[in-house]
Length: 473
Image (cartoon, rainbow, N blue to C red; front, side):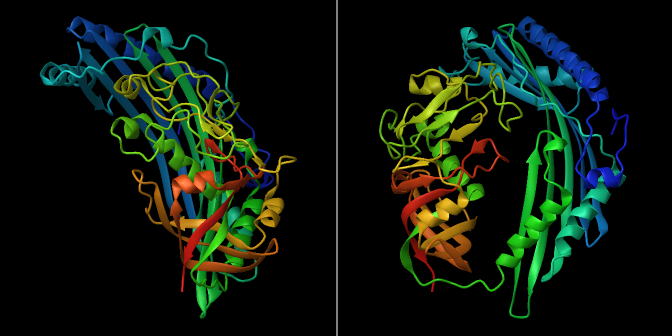
């Protein structure tokens, strides 16, 4: 990897005092300038070739990934990936082509292919760029760029430290390995409205998977951390301890008898529920009428105390951005207000198909924040408070399978976790299935915790549901 000027000793990494270097700042800006010039040049050439509109996305991603198992290096991967995508419109006929090679011949071939496709496709009344008036004009600094000056030997040492911390716990019998990943991305989106948007961001992660148990049964679990800045990582010891504690807690897991029960989704699982809701109110599912929430804008879908906001400009946010994948400006917007679905999640194409306007969500949602709370009002509950509110029921810490029907809302997935009585975890549970309908699940939310999992762009605490079917023995 190029662009780093300092090295960190393993002892410094162990203490989690990671310094960030400035040399990649200038290098990233040069890359952005080069991509912007290339994008603008290709758009000019597309217009000269007869295209009425054109848009370009170009990116360069670099990274280092190291995996260590039982103290030994398993894999080391350096990456430097380039991407270039072009879409042209001849009226309302659309053609797209892409390449991973940024040399002149490949770019010209991509342009020729996109134009050839557009000349022969059917017209689509919804095709075209997003409206020019919606393009972003302000580009706030969102604190997303934090290069991590770590080389291969240092990444290996850090992975070994993480794994050693986990394996030091009595009862841990094996390891599936520790991972250390560093990533940087610079990208440009430009179109023939004259818009040129530049973005750069870093994403780094640490992970560990462990095994515990004996001849009576083996259990596996893991933990990971994902951050924009390596300064925000939990320490190697903390991550190892967390993975070990989660793994050991699963030893001796039992099955449950079939029953109806309240269910508490741990934060990292609860965000999956919110993801299902986002998918159901997204444009592609709606205009195809393949969603259980078709025609639900303005209707109650959750309890009246619950609201969900999209906050695209959070500093260091996992989903932060000043513009969407079409250049449309992002802004703070309510998605669910007092339980009512306030809007859909739309890019310009799906908006036109539905006779609506883009919500600035081409390419996805930006930092969706589920406000913690409960029907009784008062102070939001932390995880222990959520367990107390659950009382007796199931805490879900893992779900498996793809048993979600987006059209009907039927939800049925394999699960594991813990049985809770009187607000206290009493034993681990495995090999069960939890089932309900997402409509009823969303309407039946009893509380959202303050224990927010910040490793995602879907920011929610644990979620307590009033009742689900648990299928077991």
